Length: 259
Image (cartoon, rainbow, N blue to C red; front, side):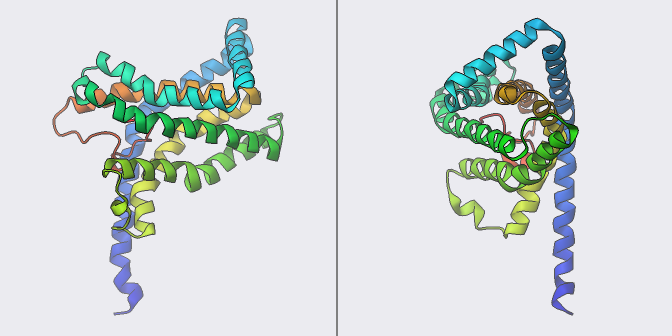
């Protein structure tokens, strides 16, 4: 039997497992994703049609302009690390997030998500340098394509999945040595990427359609809502028997909980 034939079963099995995990991820993220997308469309319409909404967003944009990367760091870290801790006591599954471990969770989550906010800020600036203001559908489409097809699969999702996997395995790098790169990407990263695409592509379409000064404020608003929805859903799953702990990469949810 040729080497190519002996590899086919394992390759087929890998594709089957990746497809199963991706379908599970899409199903798990569809409902909250639709809620988030609806919220972002309403915010965009409010900015265009309602002076009050426009005033609030422009105030956030002014704060962002004054504080720069500090705003991105603190806003994203607060939405992704502090907000789940504040919501947790109000939810049925709050016992699964004991207060005594809060300091350790924040010590990990706050700087990680803060740096993600800084990275997204710099990425949005790069997009503006490359394509200019979003004054046409072709520019918006170009920004969305670079975001979804380059930034997410090559940097954003691999780094988030890897960091959470490293954390969930006791900050040990041994978990990365047990699989080839192809298997790791197919089973750990690709399902999360599928969930990210179905949720965030419509969201970034809204973000890139509005003035660039609103990019980070809108990203933080979206992240805050996403965290609130998934913290609630995670509490419901934790209270049911046999639920695996969210935050592990094989749960197939985009890791936005700061868990």
